[in-house]
Length: 520
Image: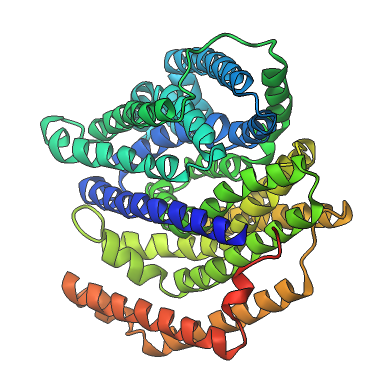
């Protein structure tokens, strides 16, 4: 089983790597086009709202509730029943997200006022940021329909993942990045406000992602005509599991929206600096944390249906070890190389060295919680696979309340950086609560080997950081150097860090056997 999981994880990571690389290219194009000014703030705001709802309807709560139920139906061996369930869940979900999308487009000014309240106040009082409110309200009408397309694309991806066809869903986000990049290059020069080209790129990207997966559903024999099935027992079960999961699995997204709300009161550029730093954090999080969580949920669901508690615990242990060996050094590297990475990737066009410096502070704050974000991704499936969504939602609410308190306490003295620190702190709290409950239920606890494994990975990471600090040139040489020289210097540092970490692992006793589990 571990070999199969590792193979699936590699496939998803490879596809996710391609998506993340193109995502960075997209962000470079956006940074070059708009930098961290007012138009950039507005676009990131208008893009964040439908993406937050996407996490609820597609990648987040829905997927965590739907996959265990689909795995249960699939285990019965009745293919017609599975097709009937897919038809009814797709029809029901399609109607709901379409209605939500129409409402969202109509009331976009209200949504903008709710989450960008600082801009709305300026608009109502003829303040300097009033134009941001008007622009965001209009742009949201273009980006909001993305929700309907991506929710159905997420459903298609969840079905394919349950059938162990991980590559298609993992590749699909590449198409969104291609759409945004294409619109930025060819449409933006034709518009008075280039940010609208990016909004249309989001709209087109949603359509393309959905259409791309349909042939694969057809080939798998599960492309069926949608039906309304609100009262279907399996659909009802998904609804029951999904309602609490709306909070439980999407707490980090809700926290990011709260950050946006508060950031709308802060200096111009705050939302953009948080966005650029969050995007770099999403690179390792998506590449490692979400990839491992994607392949582990269907497996844990089958373990639970088969009542194989030993395999369940072994697979959880494997997932924790994987995110530790990938997440801890990634977090350490991001913290110590935050400003050089931002300079190399984004500093051109409208994105200035000052923007790189400001964004580096929030990146360091976010990176301090990277391992916690990853742990949430692999610990939450321990509940969802057992069709328990109520426990994570309780902890999610605790973490969200804590994040509000942290935001208030830290935003005043530290501004936007305080918001990033608060997000990391609340993620750590959430991960801790999830683990303690799994331990209390005797479902899973860290094995002594895994605890020792994490400690050795942390030591390797600390030694790696010491090497980077010793080798890293002063920041003045980075800002004065040409782009190619910056790229060469950063590449040398990253390769040296990776080589150092790879050499230290076996020296400290970590072997390939640590990446296998005992599940059969």
